[in-house]
Image (cartoon, rainbow, N blue to C red; front, side, top):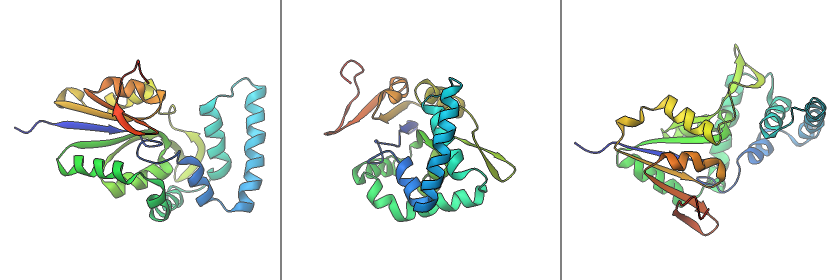
Length: 209
């Protein structure tokens, strides 16, 4: 029987050349609207600061609320699909995409595990026919509430969500790719781990990274 393999890829900075949040915002929000909504975001950040609740996750949630709250699931899906249709060639590492495609060809189960948001990652994963574990947006019916449906998918949350999605004992070999300390727990979960640095991929060693 052929061994079962699970391959876990971080997205931002691992499969993509840069963080995908800003490119998506610049693509999906018109410049004049962006100026107005940046002011709204700044106001919300100030409120979080006054209440002592400002952190990276809250700031990201406030940004997404200021830009996209009230849009429908269909509208957001359309923005994500158009974003990758137009920008994927410039955004993605061609060699990493080739590595991912080879795993799929070999019959491995492939999943994207990312702190980035489902608004645009869902479109990528549907297109590539891979599983998605990421920071999820919350909806009231069809409308985006401006809130996340759960914690930011980073650090130990990545491991928790992987274990929630997959029965790891069903796999003979687990491989993981990442590029920041937020990926270290996921890389430590795998039998084989790779770390993306400025000079390319190297075997992951927590003591050296």
